[in-house]
Length: 243
Image (cartoon, helix red, strand yellow):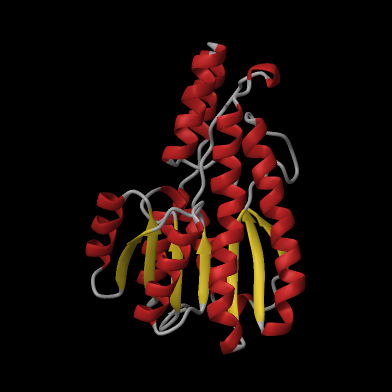
C-alpha cells in the first residue's frame, strides 16, 4: 500500500476532510497521530482505526498546545514522516466589511494562518534532523484564485498559500517537501455551516439549495492527500487544486 509504514500527523482529524484523510491513510497502512479539539469525535475515530492511531487534543492556534501534541505524537510514532494539516475554521460568511467583527477576524486568522505556522514550525523541528519529510497544508480556492464569502477566511487561506510557498523554498534543503492543497466546495461540517450562515444572511434559498447539491465528497480530497503523502508524489510541486 502507498502509505505502508508511514508515520503521519493529521490535524483537524475529528471531522470532514481531516477525518476522511485519517481513515484513508490508516487504510493504506500508515500509523496516524490524530490532532483536534473535538475530543469525543477524535477518540472515536482513533478507536475505529485501532492500534494504528492515537488521538491528542491540540488547539492549533496555541503554541504550547501544538508543541506538546507534536512532541508526544512524534514520541509515539518514533518520528514524523508526513504532516497533513487540515484543521481550520470558516466564520463571518456574508457579513459586510463595515460590520465585520474584529474578534471573528482574529479567530479565523489565528486558527487558519497562525495555526499553519505553528504546526509547521514544530513538525519541522522533528523532520529536519531526519533529513526528510512531507508537509501538506490546506489552503483553498478562496484567497488563492478567487474571493470568499468571508473576509477573514479568504485572507487566512491566501496567507496559508503564501506560507506554503515560503516553506517550500526554505525547507527543501533539509529534504522536506511542502505542498498546499486547495479544496473546492466539499461536504464537510465547516462548509455546510457556512452555506447555512450565508442563507441566513441573504435569504437566497435557490442559491442555498444549488450550493448544497453541488458539495463534493471529502473522500475525494482524502485520496489526493494520501497520494501527496506517498513517495509517488515526490515530483509534485506547488499548489494542488481539487473539486
